[in-house]
Length: 133
Image (cartoon, rainbow, N blue to C red; front, side):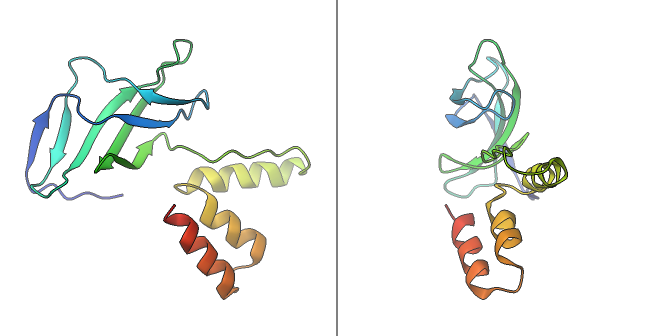
């Protein structure tokens, strides 16, 4: 995601960031780093907010960059991945799917395309719908 900065303001930690931790895989409301401020981009309403948070799990405390708008997380790094259980897949397939899931924002669109075939209009429509969820 590329965000053009045509003006910004510095905020105290503002938005609540609730995501699944990419490290420990637990859902949580991520904490701010105390005095580390968020940045509001542009003068649109609602503004795009960028900042940093920490996993609330005391055993994890992984670092997370985020971009959100209107309280919804648009993107985070490391990315939040969908759950994937490789139990009945051969190891090469499992590695391939894990890489592909990590390469996409949610992994859903690409996974649907891989399972249904790239030329299917119905699968393209399903993938597009799933990206909006």
